[in-house]
Image (cartoon, each protein chain N blue to C red):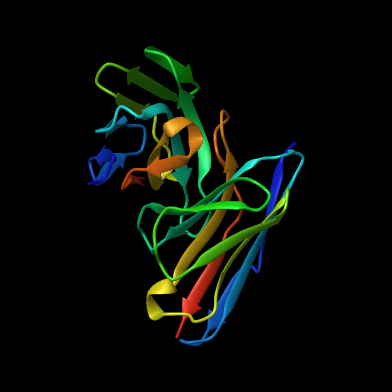
Length: 111
Length: 110
């Protein structure tokens, strides 16, 4: 069973629109969460991190975390074509023994 | 700043041939190191984890092995490649900080 689940599987967003991505862990051994962005053919780059309950904003990106439900979400406002990519949620498992990635959400921003 | 160098950038190999991929980390001592595999368009599957020289933990069995001969080096290998080994191999270091990935090695097994 996948310990980190992401939804939706894919998303089409108009340029300038808002994209909302979700990630949930089914295992309480997952503590930290990170969001990564991976452009086609490239390696993943860390986009946002969140460790405490609440919200964190960096530019056009906002991340939320609810530790009780092990749910995190990423919101991209004013989406740009360069935001088209695979977005991966990663959870740190058992203190770093494993870094578990979700199945990803493919975001396509249409001009 | 920490950097990760992976080699080679890409490989085309025949089924049944051996393979060795490498990863070197600079700017961080005793890093936690990971090997990941990614099928085209898929998620990242963790293969191995190492916290120190000589210690490697296998996460999934894919007829691959890993070794950590030096503090800053992580090697992935197999004696006999399968078609299913094709994909994108990524080395990463992490722990408390966000995992940092190398640029990856793209492997095609024919």
